[in-house]
Image (cartoon, rainbow, N blue to C red):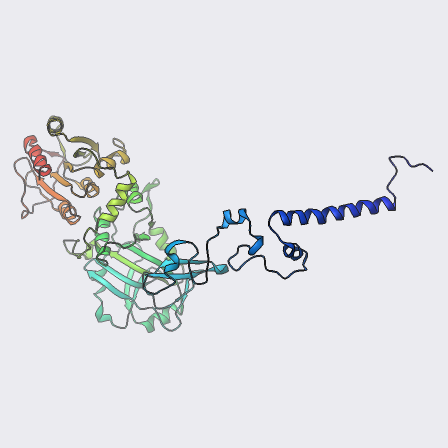
Length: 487
């Protein structure tokens, strides 16, 4: 009987179909194995008949199974045990203990090098940051101290209290000499023995790696960051310390009413431009740590407390050029291009002291005339972001040879000017404050203060400026600027 095209396949036809598919599958797999560099062992290995190793100990293919795509993605560099992967000088330093590096092995045997900063004296589990010290509690060490500005290694933060753990309490200054501010947050300090510490904390804790700056003040001060950098840099005469990993403000909330950012002493953009690698923790974060019943060991902490400090907050002996790393980071944000001419920046104040409109206009005209005759540039910028955007204002300050303005906290922006620059600050008669002078001279800049009659000398100390108006002697101001630029 004849079969039509729509008849179902018989047994012979089905056998032919299955045989063809089997041959195709085997041929396809063999073809691709050869195409991508696999040998006969690789193919048999896929089928489970070979014990040849295809993937090496470093995660890359071995021998003939390696192809151009493998090299392009994973590289062809040597990778020996106990050495950093790669070409170059890395292999020349295989874990010798003197090069300041330590080998870290993480999950799945991933290996990397990390700078060795501080010896903690306890076992740290890199995978999760949890430390186990058993009955050998990590001891706090005092690195440097002046009233209000202290550097400590291995302090324990637990439920809002910071603990100094030591067997020698007499080797440490009093707590009030370190931190005397008692603000709205639960932020206390205690000195305890290792035995007491073990009874309170047990044998486990978490490590807060790197350097932390802790600001104990309840209100902001625009010299705090400079004072912290000054203190921190006193640990290393080469001025090559890494930037802080975090700055902690236990008493200051991140926002104040209507989502307005808290004032921490520097403009928010200045902080991010000058400290791009640093995190900032506020009272909300401090309260989070307080609510966790777990000890946190701060690897290194630099403490600032204006209330505990002497009148001069720059009392440590820092490395030469201690401000340069921070100032250079800010300058690099703007490209750090050197201006072709000397730049005079007049920084206008929108609050507080102001000259009359007539004197203000006369001063700007006189500065423009000076610039034209001497080949200078004059930039007029406002301390108010609404009038002069931050980026325009700070770009001008960073390249300035002279920053000029009426006395006020806004003049602290002068710290970011050219390293050879000078601040010229205008005061009302009989009202001279050294707040900016101390900071400006500490970072290596020149300083001139004057009122409408004379230039002040270094020995004079008068009262903080008050009121809302100031009289300006335009000729004396211009002469003082010219004297500074001609030195």
